Length: 164
Image (cartoon, helix red, strand yellow):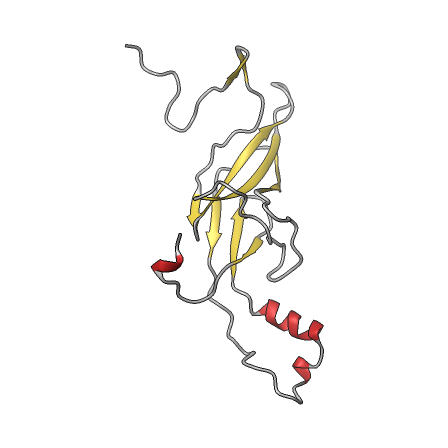
């Protein structure tokens, strides 16, 4: 019996006896909060002018659904990805990006405990929402050549009962 032509994690995908020219997953995935995060590379160009576009994906491990909804370029910022979003284009182009970093910064100090009747920080809803967004816990996603992306995450301890 002959040994397989492909090594673990790498295979030549064939479509109608031709090599596929689509996206390829060649990186190291990261698991966090029940989601898997990884990069993929989409070759663009030809043998003389190689290059391509990188993508950053996040998928729910239990369902396979997109796990990037709410991702923003600043902590608590406006989302760049809607509901059930699974991936965003990376700024890195050219060579494939193989590493995905997931950082969990410590939770911000909770300075907002409650609102008193004369508290100016609670005077209008917009100010209160901005203050709460600044106190949000985030998961930071980084890959080579890109700016960080922030994904909301639960703060504090979680019981094993909360994990699906």
